Image 1 (tube, rainbow over the protein chains, first blue to last red):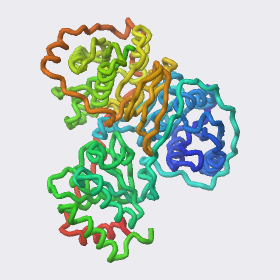
Image 2 (image 1 turned 45 degrees about the horizontal axis):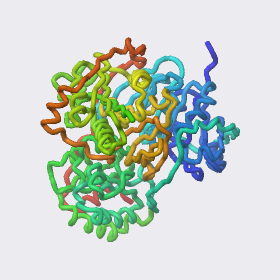
Image 3 (image 1 turned 45 degrees about the vertical axis):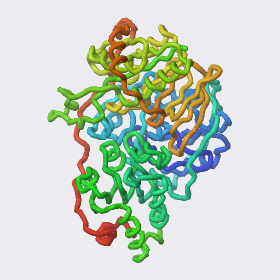
Image 4 (image 1 turned 180 degrees about the vertical axis):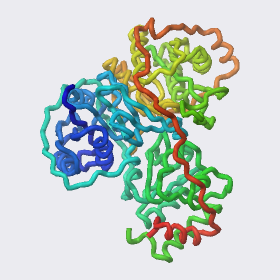
Length: 321
Length: 249
């Protein structure tokens, strides 16, 4: 028997702030194997490493600070993670677009089958994960040896703060020279991020146009809510792709999910059915969204949205948020 | 440039799958099967490159039972030139699929591989990235748009915050997201023509890949069900209920 090794969590961040997905992934990692180390790879990202060091349960933060990791491209990230992989029994990343992009490369090079998007740790080698767009849940046991895992972060609590881990600088790995960053167009919004918002208000095809989608803005601003969308609304070009909630978009689990003009296709439900309270407004009484909604209102949304805004204003709701 | 497009035969996206009573898996008996929708987008992208004169040949690969031939034929009817079926009756895990595709790439030497970002059955989102790593290639996952020029691919990718454009050296692997294109329907003449296009058959053993499962599936169960709640009559009543439930403050 060799001594057990720690687990390594790949941090999600934008070089300035640590994304909450990291602390949720740490929670999953603590159930897989301990102690937990966090790898922060980025450019001028010392503040992120300091934030990761404060996550309770984290023993050590590895900091790879180099322009090579400014955008965390998959190829250099693979080389970096492989350079430290021998010291770990498990490597985990949040199942964000970043984690999904990078981690399978690491798994393949380690010859380890990856467990994708776990929603529960049943035992240190056994995990639950949704399959068939969330229509079924698979319980899988990973083979003995190293485990490589992505984590659906909405299924795990944010690890507490108050930790005081050491930050250790590590050298950048060689640049594979396969890829380069060109440009980025990120949605700019003062609203909270979809995956961590307490309230999400989502619109569907029922809104009918990009202009009408802005009808949701007033309510979202009042409630401090993030705005999401169904795939149909994204495909119709009403909002950009990063608004999409669903099995192939983002999984969200807010306190309140307000679905407006969304019929409730199964792949959309897969991305939001873990919300604490779901409310739906749709003019079609037979819409599948009502089968999962705690509160359903059959009403034309163009009548209901202004009414809802007035009602919230009248009662002074949401302004304190 | 040769473009290789791996496609998977999966349960049709319109089918509501049911978990078997003994929790051994989902019930696939007499269920309609189709090409993975993300792979259809990959086929369309490859065929478009051929129409633009960027690609010289589009080779379709599928790993699966003999019926996966139908999936390959569908892709050939959309404009693929020839097919390769790697026959396996048992499901093959993503890492083994990536190794099989690696063996095929070693033989075929494509300039580009385009495939779906994930299959809608296992939802793993791994194969393209794994293949790229095994080949020592770059990758552009979740493609929203793509441009091939001067030995590299410039790809806008759908990421959590919006779009990110990367440039990867060819050969490379591109995985498709939903907005890359709208796959065409195959016309009847093209369906007829596709029947005459060649499909080579191989086995994992011939390719030297062990496809024995590494995971043990302990059970497949129904997801936790949400029960339908109540219908309210007015917006005011909806707000009342949400306040009562502590969801609005």
